[in-house]
Image 1: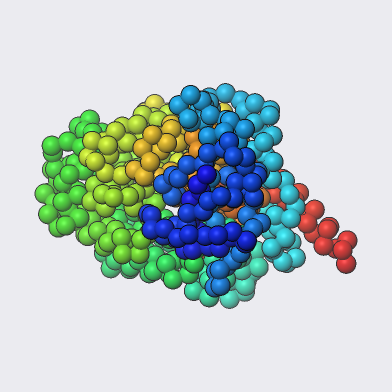
Image 2: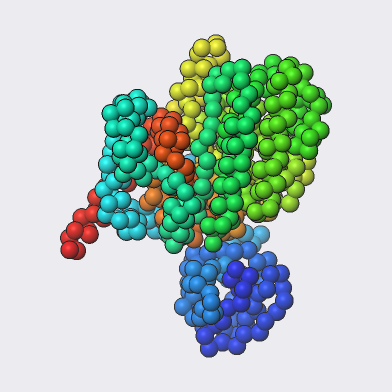
Length: 553
């Protein structure tokens, strides 16, 4: 019997067992002759497999524990991860004739026994989830989430902020904001506050995405090209990426990228119009193509017919900024998540994103595009872009969200006499979301190391479905091929449960000065009203935790 164990590419000792070292892949340890000590019989055969980090959860499933591990001097207990055991015995894991766990489609309701098993590993209803928060943070969270659950309050949030600023003055308004919404949803203003948040998250097994909040919409800067401001915003992204690298101790840095923070939204809208007017796919032989924009990353873009001189000049500067950001991601070993926008500019953003992929996704997914499942065409778009990446021989990264622009999309379609692009119901959107996630998980299983997926959702059922599918396909929860994502201040019960169970979970955490961040926060609240109106379970767990603390006193 042979077991290969790797812990963060470092050596580890076993109590009372002889250990012989071997050089294989990243430094590993070959251990033998202790089947009985781990609960196996001599009939079991455990194969040496390529090392990929995997959590304790896999050992627990096979009734193997880490109790006999001694920590090596200088190693933290949190580093004792990355152990994988595979057995051919059917008593250890159920397999089919091909040696793989049977795959089960996820296009139906979860069977009660399977759902119960998943919930046993991921307890989303445990009040101790909030034990890491102070009493003040719990009380503040209750207030903020309760106010945010009122639709009229959210709909008028920008007006309320304006009136509050005039009444309180800038300084008192800043204090009030920090004691309420800013304090709950924002990582802070500088490095010290960001560091405290990152350290707290990492103790919970949660990674942090520090995000910049600058952005613009179509029509906000008509006729003007404020290139110094766009350069400033692009530099802000690179500084944020450097800060993420400096602060993170356990997780690979990940950054969100809002292209509209350093690209004029009107130009992106014009690019989108040209694509649609000429029925052009992203990859074509015209100057309006992925290939031409990829050349533009190196300063060689051909002028695009249909764009005027100022628009072509601006697009060249946008590509220069994107290239610098992409180079910084490579230097920092980071990943970039390109945020999606409304459909009147999103095809232009996707064109830029695919150009970035063509240059930077040669060996692993550095650039990830975002797909919004409230749109009827999302599955087709994911399939087409994935097929294109395979044809180009590059890696593909995707962030899958339900999306937040439904009202704006319907209004835009009605105003311009277009077909409504949005699914008719939340159920239809959820079906699309779960189908896209299952499609990508299956593809990652068939093509290891070539794709990355972010399951970005606050929906409990979708998280459970993804976890179950990962179990069935034996996808590692810590390899980085599949990660989960949520927003700071929301769904902490899901976030902490995933982190404690050994899954890679990232918390999107905006940071910056109060004046810059709060308007952004108000826009996000308007876009995420459905989530904010369904925080009753979160609030209930907070109340239970508060009662527990006071009863203990």
